[in-house]
Length: 217
Image (cartoon, rainbow, N blue to C red):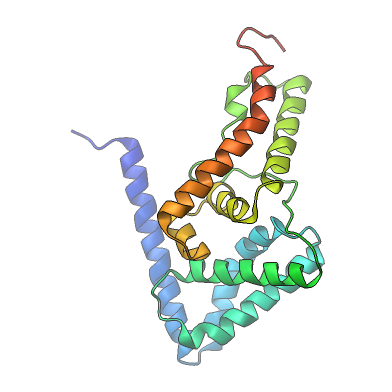
């Protein structure tokens, strides 16, 4: 019997992730041997992802670039002690998040959520699928309202829940990776994501319920 498509795709994704980790591991070893070019390759590979992650916490583009640069500098300085017990990118994400938190704390500011919501691979907050699949001004307006509501709901979450749901739903990290980034048990990650989803769903429910199955747009 042929394997289900979902199973095959999961295995392919797992293999791809393993391959990426192997590439990162080799580059890290080269950096630890004094190869600065290898670190430049890591920066090129992850600078957009780190900037996107930081954009969930900081609005100003110039500040995002400054914090990202500081995070990479910290990572470079700490690489000699990196032992590869976790994936490089989860280690780098943790440095970036902590750098952003410290930066905002120094200014007396709280992390904010970007007004953009992007679907990533893996699970997403699939609310648009519950609306009529018609390309009309009304449905487009409803979709924009849903995006705004999701963003407002996430921004209102406690920091731990906001970070967990951002890494999962917007960055596509696995529960294991999030546990490494947040330095907590995987059960805690699952609990935080569940609580975050419940809070977001509570905000969205009145909006979704207003669009009944028989309603025409």
